[in-house]
Length: 416
Image 1 (tube, rainbow, N blue to C red):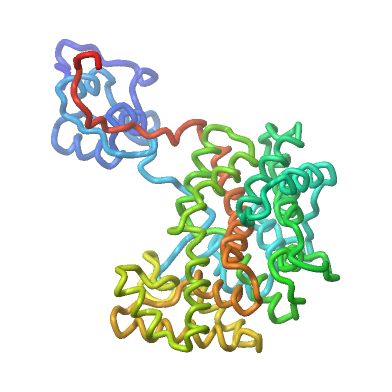
Image 2 (cartoon, rainbow, N blue to C red):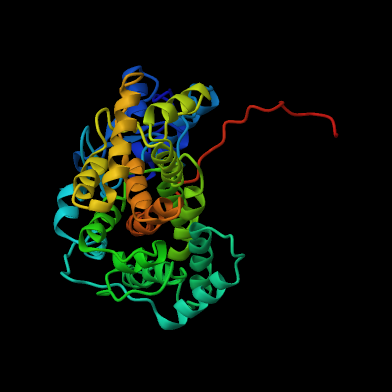
């Protein structure tokens, strides 16, 4: 520590706060107080008795002595504070409200807009700006015929951004306007699966017509609507973290969504429901879940659609969707197959059905392609990415810039 007998006391304005000390040392604020308790730093109450302040010379001396070790973090953030989603042992909540209860009462557009603004607008409908939609459709139409729906969503987001000269306006009002136009643009840019059907303008109905040639009855549409609500957000999943990092760099909302879509493109995240879809299809073809489960385990593969690291018990999203699927006659066989897979696997390991298996039941029973669940996931999660972007835009820019812990050869090294 600095010799207080020879070093004059600094005025309060030159002293460091706990957060500033934590940033300089690369540790959590809690660790700073641990240094104080061990006598390695000296704290003084701040002006008005609020918080603690520290002598920067003492802090720098501690750094020079090598008395600290940087803790892995995103810049100065050891955790990302968010008011969007809370996950408990058996539920997830948006802004403190049970997401399952929201899905029972409101539609996707209503919940998304409420999540962004804190105000519920009954019957709100999101519409695509004509010029933006035209650009997105043109770009999507230029893709190869074998392109998947999520490929089309990514291209649509980029084209929509290029068509919007105001995309760099990050004021809350502008971001909300962008979001209300971007989500329907992503859906409406997808080619119809068959002959267009008449609908009531709901985003869920428009998405259905892009994924299935079957005409949706009200019970089936209610399942899709609930799935969209339940998948809006799920705390800091990989794609949401990517979206927040982009927003931290002040990327515009289209780029934030593009970052989320990029991270979503993998078998361990958004595409997991496609694996469950193929498994259920095989179970229905072979007439036995036992044989299919055995093949997965024998090949050293996980059984798709089972287990979730955040829920020790059943995934509440899957439970909510299974309950709704019971009201859809066409889903009876796929639903029975899913439950047989869960029961069969339970003999080997106690895993419960997750939301990917529920999405697979919907996609299989509605004649949708295997990637339909991933498409539903991507469209739904776009609203969550926007909610997180709105939070991140209000934070200090570039705060989510981690420091690497170099583990390569120490310099100097010879030229190669």
